[in-house]
Image (cartoon, rainbow, N blue to C red):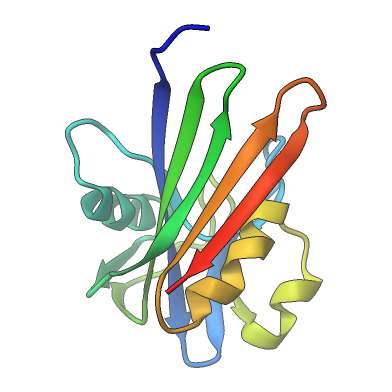
Length: 157
């Protein structure tokens, strides 16, 4: 087994307006469902700058006072891969919301409906932590042979 690890970095930013959050309705690839705006971090960009840029590209909005909420990571020991997603939130934004985006249709969803709409399991798992005070770390070890989660560790502060 090689000691070199392949690191990949992404961001997500949950935008809240009163009792609604802004999600993208993704329908174009294998990651279908509702998801907060976000994407890959471009080197040498900071994680926060990447989150702000991705929100602008995917929603048309400029976010302000972005708050770090937590870390979500997948570790695949078989392939020596580590996928790290930095999660942010804000309720301060300006600009005009796009009617559509390459990543999905921006849609305001009432907080009470979040657990009833289609979304990836990893998004559903972290949304409650993103809406609460404090930060979180979710560490998922992937079983490559079974193509499923092997261990999940959640820490909340």
